[in-house]
Image (cartoon, rainbow, N blue to C red):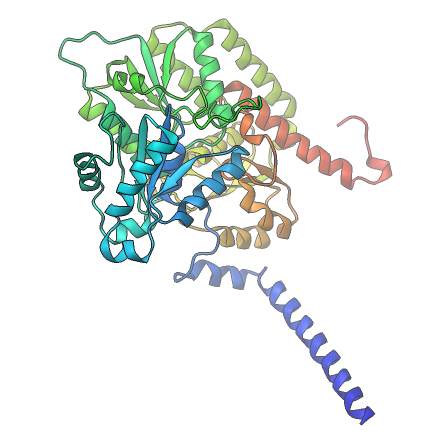
Length: 492
């Protein structure tokens, strides 16, 4: 009998070796042009897209208003996902409630759950406003939020003194950008009052950050406007509510969010500047067409050119000269770029993330003489693609390629078949970067595997210095780590 077991053991060893060889062969094939062609031809499946669903954007928007509770009409699991993701990124607690729809709601509708949710959440959390959004489930069963809110008020389940703007945010179309826009638009449409004819405008400039999870960006914009001496109102300001000091006291609604009274009169302010195009389209249209506001959209102020454009827009609207302090900051940023240009010039970069962020990053890299070889945007459209291609043309960047509606498995194929020198984007790109053996700088949303990145601005001249420092020092770290003794230099 011994030889039987011995033969069986040998056979298993042979099978194990064959399986390992087959796995190795497949892994090597996955890095070939042949596999890349098959990968880019797939249509029936999406693998790791770099986008989130609409309600997540709506929940983030709601956090930017004082004493506001995000009220999601859908299942409890969906809301747990939004809270979990946003809390991991900001490393802060984030409150949101749901109507906890189950099978009963799918059959009979979710109005009863909404009634109970309004009453319970109001009693427990005492909000001034519910920012109501939907999920896949409530959208598919066809619940009418307008009727639910009206019926809840009529039956005394939703008090008249609690504001209740609502937005349809189906998870199966669009992304977090549309969800943010739909929610902000609903809040402004539901609260802001159209100025009466002949009413004098204030000197206040409305600022709309858009879906921006880099709190440092919002704080940098506020710092710049204070240096200008300009009066401003940030619409959906969560720069403090998601970065509240740890002082031993938990607050359901941290201070610093946009006051609801200010939202009511925002249409009477001098103008609005939106810092993102793709997450503010509906809101900007409402302010401009329905409320008669001078509403403008600028490129996200990343890099020198787009920061210059932002400052010029503020100066034009406010009729204030650009302060010398900001001119000096510009000079320091250009000095920083000049010192570091040799380390970025000619380097090939792969960048991915949300469209407005990518437009700014590509512009900055081109200013530095870098080559944005791959620009991948899962929630990009043809308008975005044309914007990036125009940038390539303006800088005569012949190597740049832009991909819309593609995912991170597509990005992996690009990196494995024709490697870039660095990957720039959110945390999910770390697996492709590791496979390709290239460094990865984290920017955008989400960032789960690094700390404090969301506190450092990418905007303004300060953002130029931050980006340049991160990128160049990463290259220098690699140079030191891989140098032999003869080339381990003190000066770089």
